[in-house]
Image 1 (cartoon, rainbow, N blue to C red):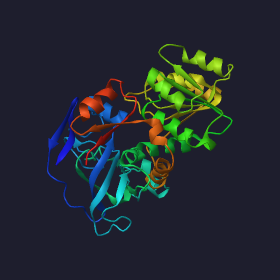
Image 2: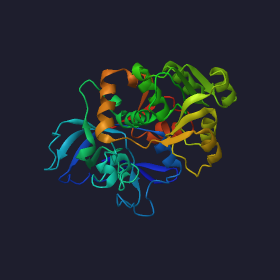
Image 3: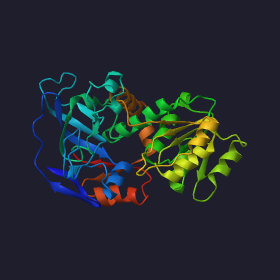
Image 4: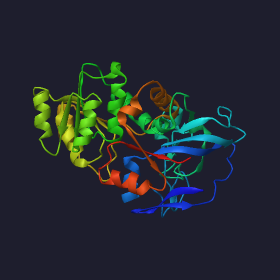
Length: 354
């Protein structure tokens, strides 16, 4: 079968490899239909810092070149004897993150920060292949009304929904989203199709004019180009000097994090979703004196956020609003990874595999 394998920096190959082994008692084997690409895939194409190429991963045990793909939809072709909630022939989307179910965080229901957490497609072989094997517990049945292409967006949308749950946005707030590609655009889209969650004012900040235009179509009241204007001045003008109640930072860039913190008023909140590649200096004295809060959101809680994401994709036009570009496995690098790396991607790249 064909698969997309990361061998190192700038080295992703489409190769013929052996079929996966039969599923274990708690696993399923999928015939993969679609898989979408994200900024994390692009980052790992450039610098595979998360992929255990040289040293065995402490939770997954994987070491060496790795099959990419953590945003996946497929058909169950075989299942282990202990799997009761799925049947052969079911169409499912995977949550990608594996949890142990036994550590204190798992017992609290916070599987996304399990002490033994790892992600298929980053720390273990993923689903950018014609067939793939996954734990059944992370596979969620796709509603009939949801297309294969839309279902590939379920995992990143679940990340956005988890972030919104962490944000505790209220209707009277002014909220700024910093970085409106990838997860940032899905945050805006989730707010657009759920108007009861929408804050009073919603600002989008980015350096890409096409992303900002898309953000306006998704309902942002103001789109601020951080490359062409002073973000703090623009926010001051829009909010009459008050600043925003909350900033949602989705880039992980140190300069953007500092920008986001500066726009928050005294007592405001930064929700950090983007993962920095390097340490970030925080103005702790300012945070203390102004009682600004910094909270974080990591991944999603599979049993909660994946069904919610699939329901939204099945019952709304969210996937259409975000926009999808269909590509083949053979053109993954040229039409999927490189446009993301070079900031040319303005729609979600979805790989049609089977």
